[in-house]
Length: 330
Image 1: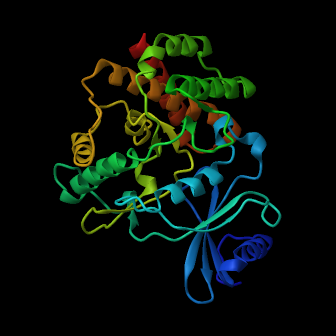
Image 2: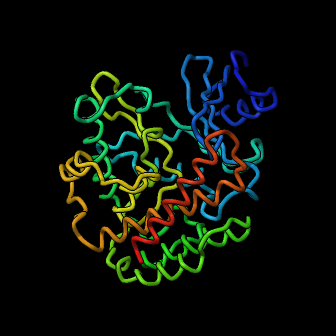
Image 3: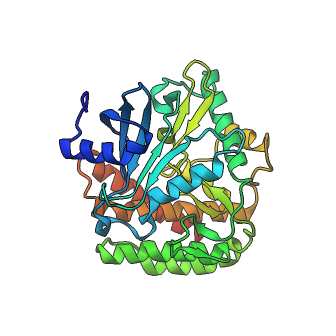
């Protein structure tokens, strides 16, 4: 293989072996942008290419909910393969044997388009491309949420974070995050979080149908036609779960605390009934989900051992958001 960049020789050999059913791999480039799995763009001798996602091999540094996420990604791609208006990659190959590569591997088709953040969009008020992208993201959410599941919780069938009701499943998710915080000695207000969750259990019990929630529809996982703002690709559903469609609104802006964009809701309403943000129970669940995202992202800072000038500010934002959610729910 030649033409590689930032890919070790032994990695190239292992990738070539895994990909042999698809053809002869002749080049590989490690892609950046993700903070969980390792992803490669691999080219074949016939000029075609594919995206290879590999799971972390040091599983002792994973949060409880993060085990088997690459398997979950493949599962979601297959679930969505025939859903109109949901442009996800096609799964070309899976290798979960860990006999050649030390972790799970999913090979998928490469999407067209440009990452949202690289399209140079303005605001929805002054750039019709931005307005279109926001509307189409809302419509995408509405289509995703028409896919229903057998239980609540993370989509991986082996996940321990699954239950018959949304209140039970979400409780397991929060408790797992608190357990991870204890394991890595991350200071979080665990008792207050548990008490808050108990107070709002009936609110969570209002969610009766487990729908497919991507949970991570931020611009880094979305591809657009930069000329028009058309949404042409969606990736990285490894954290998907069966749950409350309202969670999707928070997952798309995990660090935010502002209102849900009007254009997003309009897009959602164009294909399905949008969540009623004037409903007190819906507003409470939004705060519960903001609490959850702040909690898991705050905890992951320790096992991930992130470095850089951004870390301190990121930690402060997460702690502020956690506190704000708890105060709002008090």
